[in-house]
Length: 184
Image 1 (cartoon, rainbow, N blue to C red):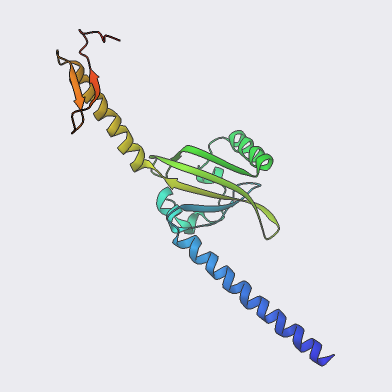
Image 2: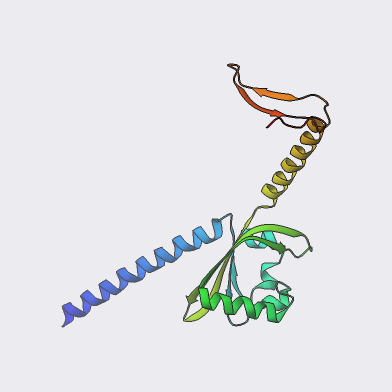
């Protein structure tokens, strides 16, 4: 009996050490991630924990925000919109929003990819939310589109046809001026 008790105590301590190591690995990944991550309660959106990337993205003060609800922080303006979101998350368990406009504390709009996952933490339903800032990519894409539109406008205003030819002399494409209709 004594040996069996000692064996169980040893096994339990090994499991506890492994659990602590696993939790430590998760904590390191959570806090080192460049993706903004927040864990909030499903019921009222109360902030449970968030990583540094989240605090940087939102501009919120962690000491003042932990324990506050999404409505109190102004993350959701409308309780009905949040209720619809929660109902949708309960139904699907996971949501992806390819272009979510995140409004930070300063009132600036930030383009993000948003991922939401319904998780159970300490037997409570919670929301794991992740936001990846794509503002720079969106700005670069918009600049590229504007540049392309300007280039097309300049090329369209030239009265002659423009041909694109490869290095080895192969005809690739052409652009007719507005006055010359394509012969096809």
